[in-house]
Length: 256
Image (cartoon, rainbow, N blue to C red; front, side):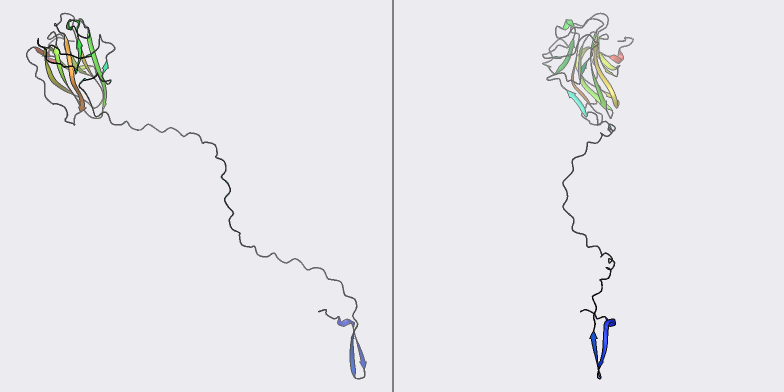
């Protein structure tokens, strides 16, 4: 509804009646627009859109530093051989001696009669024996075993000998030093000796002196066991050598 402009009204008196007439002029110009109102409050955040595709794999990182080596595992529990099929790989032939220990695959003669089919024996013989191997005066043959043990151990074995008594010896050794030995004519003898914990080399040597020989000239080793001293699997008996057999420790002034 348009408002009237009262300044443009005219009054006329007619008798006792006042007549009011409008004398409306032309419409005025539209005033200037008002200023823009303040912005309304922000609307609520819309829902999260779906995850985009996985980007390409980045380059491989540099290799880390190698860790330090762990502690050594436990040593071998025990070693045993009866030489039924072979000389085990853990027994090494001495490369600086004059021959090799070998397996005997038939009976052998110790006291003049055949003592049986002892094909389980490692054997070494001189030429006079007529079997495998050749040894002459001032020669020796040797095998060795390198072991690592975390406790003291026992070396247990059987031995036979047929040699020039008091001069040609089978000896058993620890780290290059003779523990004991035998010469002469006899066997089998059950022998054992103790070795300390740690790294050790056990060896068996048959050596001839500078002259003379026995008609057989041979030593035998069988049933070799190297075991933890606490296991109880070995025999703790001291061999008693009969007349005709001399121990290395009782050889007097003779030195091999």
